[in-house]
Length: 268
Image (cartoon, rainbow, N blue to C red; front, side):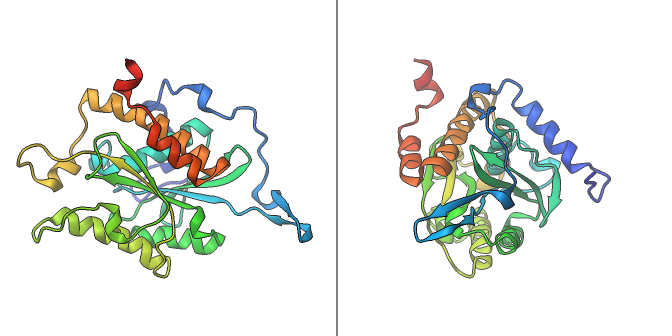
């Protein structure tokens, strides 16, 4: 049993959240017939070497803030996307490792690790960097998932790489607190990757604050009922995009993301 500092069973909590958040998840999205193979025994042949080489796992990281006060807010859609992947693929995020809620499983026959860092956003690199270092995961197989104010609400964008400013893309404003906070978040990850920016990112649009609403208050606000329906539909597209990325490659996944229909378009 994984028990937190306040007696919270993180494994049960994570599983309960996923069950409550996605009670009607389409089972057609699952690879229910796949055979689960231990990471250590999964390997692929190489043309120049008759001996098989182990397949490196993918690491799928959702960024967010820990704690009940942040659950269900715009800034935590990275966490929710990882929950959606875990639910669709039958992966339990039941352990607490590397300062993260952490789980291992497979998408098809590709080994994957899911992580939701439980550090606060500006030091999330401590968790992600430790996992990458311990398992020796190539950075091109580390997908970081997070919210983006500059994308229309519920829109996805898959990028092959970028800088710490690429997390948010905000036009800099001297007193924009959220800008500085988000740059610190992505910089923390990059710093723990020894300065490399060559890792893919899946950005989830949360839209812009209405009127003169403070940006920091907006990203920490909950969703309306209609927004929640749209976002859950986007998570389904996100799960499919991740599957294509791991099984067919970046270009096909990016093409899927760029052509995916919104809930409104799908309903027409």
